[in-house]
Image (cartoon, rainbow, N blue to C red; front, side, top):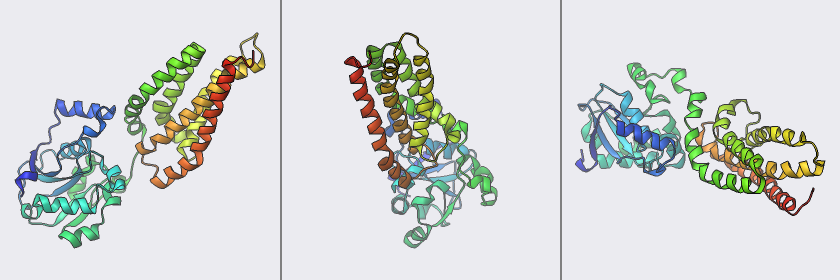
Length: 325
């Protein structure tokens, strides 16, 4: 083993680790939640001990080591630039070339007598098992989707259908909401201040409602919003959020139809487009899209969002100039 790329670790998750997880989940110092790539010794492994592969994103590494409590193993950490295994596999950093290189520079072939690697299933899109075997002699075995299933999987090295299935239930979706909320909070505050100055509490509350719809509420209602595209899901959700404000405004007496329309239409168009745009950005937080579908959505719906937002801004300016009074 190469001492410069070999480290020791344990299965214990400390308070510092929990703090790191919290900061990662809320998007603070997002690209700094990483560890050194290399070979990690867990417990007291020998030459027959299993070798697990993961990325150097702290949440990925900690999920793996914590589930191997009481086991002796080697953890080979690839340099994924602080990105989780699934995303890194799609980007190519959790890939064949990095895996083969990390095996060689860590001296793994000297640490173990066998030639078998256990990889997370979600890394399969980036790794060619055939090329790994041809280039360094190690065989690739794809384990379950979730690290928590490893103890059961290791009993037989056979994954059940449930272990192979990607789940995205309510808890899985909600844990992703904080990072999106924190990432958008500063633009939201700016827009909310401008909306309040130009339109009072009515517009301020509408902005807050749109922000909440585009972040936590979207994750809650994602499975039940019709259509497959995230953009159209966002347009539908934005429209549903706008409806109560439209109805409230038109229930006001003493105002002309044109005045009521000019009060709600500009900000309605702008915020509905904003909700759709934010939800389009959330595709990277879910397991139900791919780069091809994201690209298609960008070219198909971003122009629609731009027209809606631009039209809303023009109408807002006309309103400020007195149209509809």
